[in-house]
Amino acid sequence: MNNPQNPKASAPCTLPPELPKEAVATDEAPPPMGNNNNTESATATMVREQDRLMPVANVSRIMRQVLPPYAKISDDAKEVIQECVSEFISFVTGEANERCHTERRKTVTSEDIVWAMSRLGFDDYVAPLGAFLQRMRDDSDHGGEERGGPAGRGGSRRGSSSLPLHCPQQMHHLHPAVCRRPHQSVSPAAGYAVRPVPRPMPASGYRMQGGDHRSVGGVAPCSYGGALVQAGGTQHVVGFHDDEASSSSENPPPEGRAAGSN
Amino acid sequence: MEPNSSIPPPVMGAAVAYPPAAGAAYSAGPYAHAHAALGALYPPPPAPGPPSSHQGGAAAAQLQLFWAEQYREIEATTDFKNHNLPLARIKKIMKADEDVRMIAAEAPVVFARACEMFILELTHRGWAHAEENKRRTLQKSDIAAAVARTEVFDFLVDIVPRDEPRDADPAAAAMGAAAPGIPQHPAAADPTTMGYYYVQPQ
Image (cartoon, rainbow over all chains, first blue to last red; front, side):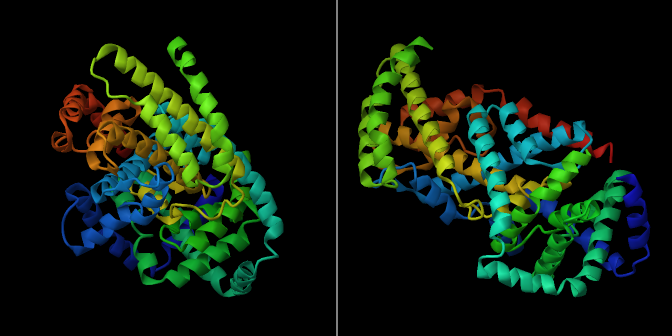
């Protein structure tokens, strides 16, 4: 890990375009924290609050699965469930991340999530999720075979044809991501400045995000590419559902390799 | 354990009829059975002692049925790319914690499933409270009561305000009163301490 990081760290530092992005990140850093603390403010805050919760339509649909047909759900019940789900995610993620720190790892894995739930008292969730994980990985093997079939994936292939065009940009994007980690380890201020960087990028260009994602997928085969995939995944904070789906189908192998290397 | 073991047999008997109905993909049939079961398992408890133990046993039986259903659903799952919850949103919420650096691609997928089970369990427990009050509309106070009654949901005490139970009924208000007894404040302090600890190494 250290050897690859050194050249990555040196290359991005010489890139002038990264400086304004970091500046933008610095400007973006304080508002989100303030908004999170206040949880009520301007329209921008409202937008972020909506992003902070699960969609009410999805939540309602899931709730109805366990209720009789004649049952009605009040709006305030839906809202409170939305809040509870976000709190559940933050609660479990915090515990999982603590384990990562203890074991000096940077990537929060599915095992960390399941372990955290067990530790926090959600014992009933562990066995179903274990079975789900195993079946998902079996399905990813089949998913690989199915890649040639669907027309949608053919479309993704067309996207892959543009890899040469996106590769350089992807490299530029990935280098800063790697460079940012040492900054985070060096000083908290730099960490705060660096972490919000991915947020403005999606707002400016969703298409670029898609392109980057496809490039990352293309690079996946090698271990070096594995690191790139992880970085890309981190940057890909806001993305389309289809992209996320393809990401989940393509990334598991590199993750396995990364785990093996660990 | 023994009381719980004595109660499950009749519920399992009901479960025997439940699976074929479940095959119908959540038709009215299974819900009618569930409703009857709920009516039988959740009588209005006038006395505090014995009714509480009975109620606890009934809740345990209901949850066993619920988790058995979860297993069946997972076994039936064939498409892992269409989720009931958006992965990007889950990832954004995970990244809201500044200490979280990198997230494995399959982590949000597992979280989507976990959140689905979480919503189902919370809704299930909330609905039990609504039925106790002979209501057909699930309200915020029902969720608050479910949170107050379930220890594993202690981390939600601050999310679900306790004022709501006042509007519902004295029992819910009592539950709300019981909630403050839970030492949630120290638990709330833990995340702060953890955050501070994380900042220092950086």
